[in-house]
Amino acid sequence: DTLRSDPPENKVMKKATKFGVASTSIFYLSCGCVGYRAFGNSAPGNFLTGFGFYEPFWLIDIANICIIIHLVGAYQ
Image (cartoon, rainbow, N blue to C red; front, side, top):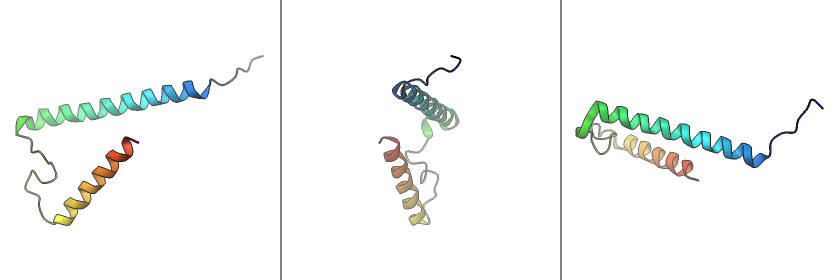
């Protein structure tokens, strides 16, 4: 036979999950390092309002809600 069977699904999913978590972790860690390198300890606690951008307030609220939805979806 020249054809071989596919690997078990659980092995494929473990490999895909490890790759996804590793690539996401590397991306977020590099973003954090670049941000710290750019702003240092003077970085504001909230980047959405830390640079003096307060108006329109509803836009800030929508952005914060989108961030929460993004993070909750990432941890499901």
